[in-house]
Length: 260
Image (cartoon, rainbow, N blue to C red):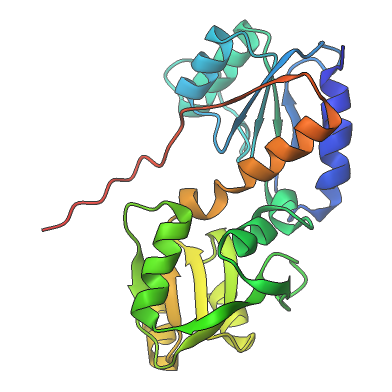
């Protein structure tokens, strides 16, 4: 029977921790590395509800993208969001492995998966100051900005997207799953020479600059630009641990869209 440490070894081989950004917290964050694993749950976030569901389902190991412990915990009580999740995992003897920016940067990780789901050809690294996160690829055919925004939403299963209409047809696309809407990331995307940028959490002042530059931007949400990587992780675990029971959490984007 494989142990938590065996899963950690495979995941470290796929998304080495040395790829993480400074200050990130990745790896085995909760639990005993020697615990035997029969059942695994994949999730983007380990919320208190996800932790409770994992324990109730008899899960031995939860693997997530976002760290269940990111900043130092001042307390571990049900009154605190992260503390509640950690306490539930500990009470259920359920381990947690988290891969964050190392999974963003890894070959085949978050951003390569996002590029693949969007049907981008020849996706490769963008010069992003050494982060190794942004990817740039080419669509099989040109799309108008409006058609591209709809295409992204459909491919990612979004309920809606925020978008900026650029000044040219879309053929080359740069992607950054998750919070790629900072000025720094946006300027790297713009410098990549793409026609469109797909990311999430685009800041308002940044949107003004990108609109002025004529770049089409599709803000498809943090959850929907990162969640596809769970399919990649599922394939990886099925290959390396045949016979292991794999579950997906019911966790979804808590943000809703209201039209008027």
